[in-house]
Length: 92
Image (cartoon, rainbow, N blue to C red; front, side, top):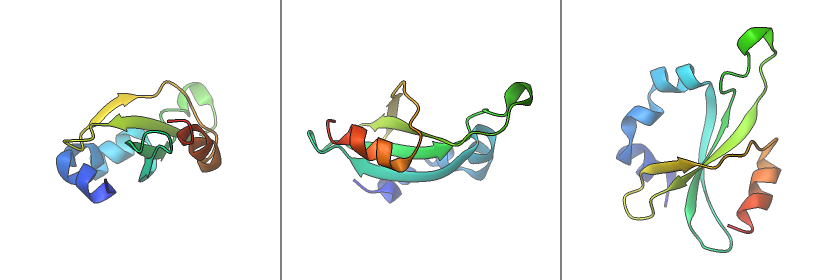
């Protein structure tokens, strides 16, 4: 699965307005090593500057429907960098 397929399946998710609102910086589609399943991986500030705090860039992962390329559940974990995402994907 490619990012272009995911963007086509859910165009609103990738709109400039949505990207700015959520603080998303970058999107990638990466595959789990154990299952081969595709995941949407994104770097985001996700409202981290609320209550006077400094912005903090984190990486988030969403499951993708393997047939429709639609974005599904968010993995409830923040990743500090792309290397920690790739480590997680080794077992997914």
